[in-house]
Image (tube, rainbow, N blue to C red; front, side, top):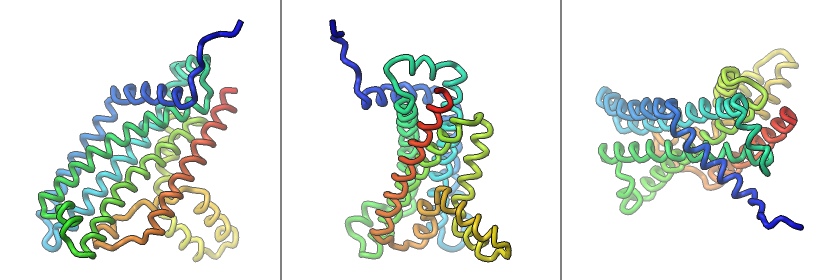
Length: 278
């Protein structure tokens, strides 16, 4: 006799795990500490702008965007690195996969929950940031409706840069989950932080490789630069500060690159966790 119980779909399973993960993270003090520090950084930009003798609005633009970026990276790093290890340590992982849940679905569900937290953090900080910009006379609505072509391009770059901060935090979180599948929390934090710092200086790494006298170094460093995520794509601070427009092809290429890296990283994390616990 066939059972009448209907098995949940993969989307339902991932959504359920993501919901549980979201509320689990929301109870964590780390989240609020990072958010508080980020709000303080955004508030400090007013003080910094008052100390700037020339172009205080550029200080506001650059300082605020950096605060959003740092907050997203820190949250994706610290939360992502410890979440999976904590589940395995508390045996929550083993209890979950005893049910009709695959290990890949569990990883995707965890990432979904972290993504929701990162989005909430990004939304709050971006909202505060735009309010501060309006207080300094950099009203986005005025630019989008009544400014000239150069003003619209400049402010479009700002909105794109804010969106890229969120995508960057997702990529850091995915790498944190990937590294945590075979490492401890503390080691994962150090490794992912190193990956982020190197990935934020890929162009400098290639420049160093071109100037090396060792043939092995000239071949090895470009390989590292290719394998590691290139976070320079998502960092538009200089373009925002000086109001430089972005090519549509560049924006689409960056979005595609970020999506592809996310898929590959999470796919590899699923493979590693299956091998580790299989």
